[in-house]
Image (cartoon, rainbow, N blue to C red; front, side, top):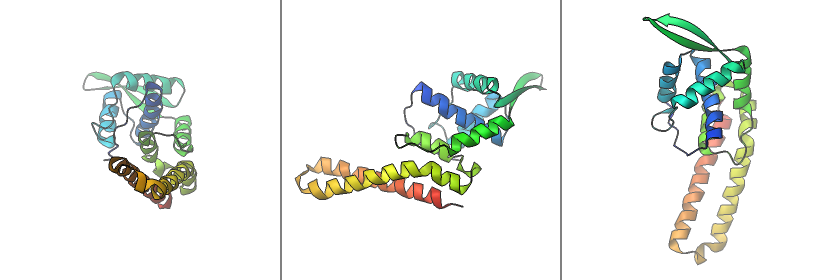
Length: 184
């Protein structure tokens, strides 16, 4: 199970994340809405990402209208269910979403969602997707280290602790991105 830390996201970002998550989950396992919601919860870890019914079904409707998925009515246990399958255009769109470069201002949650599907793309595309974010974080890390070197002796203890914590977070992020770029 992939555990993604919670980040508050606005509704347009939720739709983008939901589109990627739903396409990715349907790619791996065609599902009806309720099963899809359970699969997302199991894969991404509750309570870190909750897919509410309004987002789920509006995204499914949008993806179906765009031709990325097809819903097929099935009857099981006397219940009608619409099982969604990804189309060839949907697979292409999913791969484009995953391979799109991560911009430096991407939220950590958004990046982790994208990274959860990096196995679908070749290493070269994964590196291109990570590189802009990696370089931006590396620059922030270098600037923060320089700031600490120049100002540490003048900083109040709490401010210095916050700066050091930020530096550690950047180090961890950089290590994570480097590891993702190394994996074959």
